Image: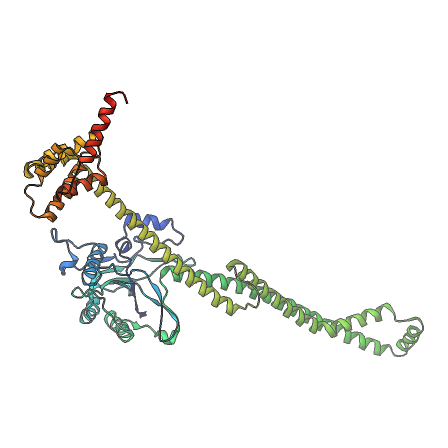
Length: 503
């Protein structure tokens, strides 16, 4: 039995659901398009689960219990941002970029510090069998995070009713350098070496190289879809073979009939030869009056026999071509391919390309949904924090203002002066109000210090009354001893006198 391991980015948000058979996850998968087949009652061995709690990054500082994979992942993001010059988040999605050397676009994989190896095992594989594998990873700077052995996954053979178990393991791996914030790279040679280490540790045969098989790795959903397409194609080929078999049987029947007619014709010829003179006379009469009905029948049979093989082969060839074309047309219609110039081989190639594209799209949609879910959660958290802050400030506002009044001598009188101006609807301060405001600035140093006092007074005033830019400008003028309200006061007095004498 062969084994091998394929390492891919870990789905940090749902890995525990699958590996630990979370009840909600199992129930959700039962109603999905491709449900995962769990048969715990038929499994010969129970599943095994192990989590690494030796590193402090993997355990809760208070309880000491292992953290969720998503929690460790968030810690990795924080360390990455600490070492990034701009403190940016790592690029989690795959992206396209231009290769300046080749001039071609290439795909750059997203940031994946936590990865998962899915490994084929035997029915009697034990957790300790993985010790050499884990040691190999540690020697290469990669720390194992979790190990899950599954013995309850597989399918029921429809012919025998037997449970066919898919024995495999999920090995979680930390590819993150906690000191530098970078991910650890293992090249193709190391990955090839890993396959040999796996085979030796588990007592199994090593899988064939990709260069030999020329096949890419497919995970369970990809393989299931590929298998369904292959089964459908085999079914269609079998239908064509059935039609061809039927045509072959018809051809055989025609051949048998041809042989029978030949035998009858030979017997008739012998009989005619024995007729001798009578036949000659009969032929003479036939020459005078035309062929007899029997002679016509014989001639017709001879013509049929002579041309029957050609017609039979042509009919079979035409039927074979028609049936194959019918299947190809139906496949193209189902897969939404253009049916022009398609063969079974080109359909298979196109089908595989579409399956790959569909899987990529499904993964992208899943990633977008996950990111959208996280964005909504983050947004809700921000809104909740803002509401709580507003509530706290609202409750503490009176207390904070009282404390400011106690600490800042003259502030209360300055705020009362501003409120008095706003309430009266004036666009200037009276001399008395100016003195109150100057009293709040008495402890200031130079003009710049007084300007800052003016800004702070304006800010506090904004919490108790309406303020505007003109008010801010006047406060700054008072701070720099350049405020002059003479014109405005005189204008108001003139208006008042005019009102008093009837104007």
